[in-house]
Image 1 (spheres, protein in one colour):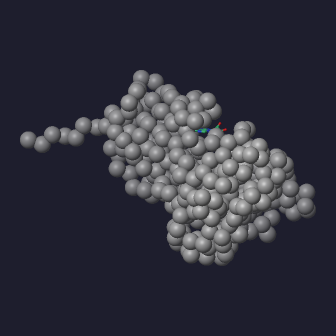
Image 2 (tube, protein in one colour):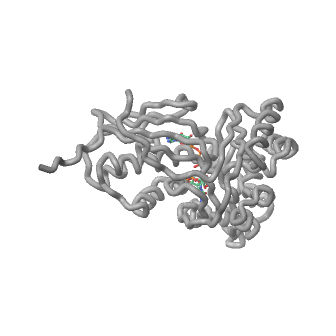
Image 3 (cartoon, protein in one colour):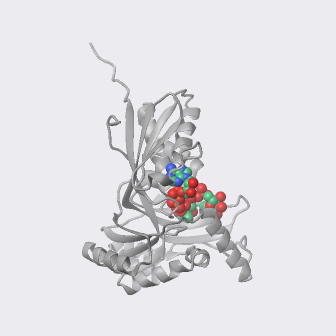
Length: 317
Ligand SMILES: C[C@](O)(CO)[C@H](O)COP(=O)(O)OP(=O)(O)OC[C@H]1O[C@@H](n2ccc(N)nc2=O)[C@H](O)[C@@H]1O
Ligand SMILES: Nc1ncnc2c1ncn2[C@@H]1O[C@H](COP(=O)(O)OP(=O)(O)OP(=O)(O)O)[C@@H](O)[C@H]1O
């Protein structure tokens, strides 16, 4: 006699943060987004999202940044689960636990990682067997950054950042992230870039704002050369973030002076990402930054790492 497999009671998925090694922002589009050319790298800071059937929709916050997780229907993990339920006509209502180790509103795509994790977790909980490209399609509806934490590794992003292509890369890179205690709003940073462009006499919607990833960065990734990668790091949103938070420029300059191979704002900030030569160099830089008192919190991580992965089994609570 064959026994039908029992559906899982709950599923936990771990998803990584990202840093944009290069972020080139093109013209403002009529839909309010900007054309982008970017290279993402997944780094070893993770959120864990557990989904379980429940009698009402709820978010159970946990982890280092628990107090900053929205617990209403606007939470991206809830939106992701509801999107899957709606598409496949599923009536279940879920409790979603989020263990947050990715800074909130820090430019490291924490909410997007949670959305990506929730998509994969629901796929497993409901036994849908979705293909990676079906998940990526749903992810792009939820946000420009959501497809990447599903994929992980290194990837090129185009369109509004949601269209991914693989990137040839070797080696492991050692990062130090300097985290601020108040976040920056992504739309506000893009708006500030447009304001700076307009103030410099150039229409933000002008097609002359083209976005292309540099050959130097791709070559540095291909060869696994940290020094070359440090020199090629670039973020078009740096100046907008520095304009809104001048202290971030001071922090970036200090990290480079303390020996980082390169320093950029991570995505839309305010986290500042520093690339270092080795694990030891990342420890040294962390000590120097901590002594400087220029940031609230310092985290070390390596990249690239895997995209979202199922890590359980039943939930302990
Ligand atoms: C800065 C990055 O993190 C770099 O990867 C992303 O571009 C941000 O991606 P995200 O947080 O997923 O952003 P979304 O939720 O898609 O969009 C939020 C808002 O950011 C602005 N936005 C976002 C992406 C993009 N290519 N152009 C934009 O101008 C728009 O005002 C948009 O309404
Ligand atoms: N699961 C979630 N975790 C964190 N923030 C969330 C979540 N869902 C919705 N949000 C909202 O999204 C806003 C941005 O949070 P998030 O941590 O994703 O920022 P971010 O890392 O700067 O994003 P990105 O790098 O993709 O632009 C927060 O201010 C919060 O109100």
